[in-house]
Image (cartoon, rainbow, N blue to C red; front, side, top):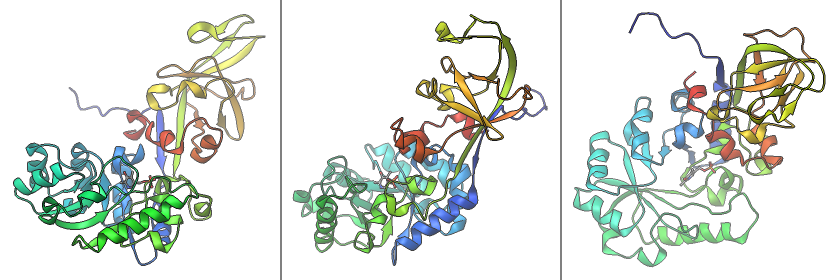
Length: 349
Ligand SMILES: *Cc1c(COP(=O)(O)O)cnc(C)c1O
């Protein structure tokens, strides 16, 4: 097109790499003799693989978990593909061929996947055992199947259904994994996600798989003192305008100016993960001042009240609250949702 580089975007996500590395180290330490891996699916929970995987790698992480085969390439730009596990496993010959070509390791979740992997040539894989979540994984009744015996299993794993709760199911799942481990040859065992790490050493086995807590989420109170916030979101004021009494703001004019007032249009909207539910009652911030949101959040913009900040001009940066723990406590969205909805324009900013 031309040689002029694209100008910087009018919104930005800052991933605090030191906090991310510190969170991984804390979770690795809490995993005791086990090593912590990292769940980096969904573009590292919305924070961007390119922002997060190099930091995790440099902190010492050697096991990365994605959900889809389509997520392998981005992660493999930063770490050896043999360290990448694909949680959904292979559904076709094409998936198996891609696994071999890329070097990423499939997680086998069913007898069908086991047979497919073996028929396509076999090789190192991981195996998911379902110990009660009923999502992915072979059933306990299937562990003695010859299709499982034919596998060359590195990590034998299961996934906790309610690790963020105090429930007897957690221990039951750990015990079931321990029992299965005695009958299926494997090199390493893995059970705990972020919340599972907080359950203690009986849940850590050899490899833990934190996701949420790496990125600043706190699924269990025990983790609060160990986990630092990682995400900061800011957006620029695109325009400031003066409203006369009775004028409406945004789609459907759900805010009507009660008096003369100055407002500002900000470059963030629901396409960036700033959902409409953030609208009334919410605020952006600048230098400690709250700037209430007026009217509906649009796809790319939101309007804020600038009465408290008459000095602000187009181009100034505003803080967009992304305190995932607080927001989840207000029951807006789960901490997971608040991270993974972060839009592509922010991640690539
Ligand atoms: C996403 C995922 C994790 C990470 O869970 P968090 O609750 O985010 O720590 C671990 N294991 C599996 C199988 C997953 O799908």
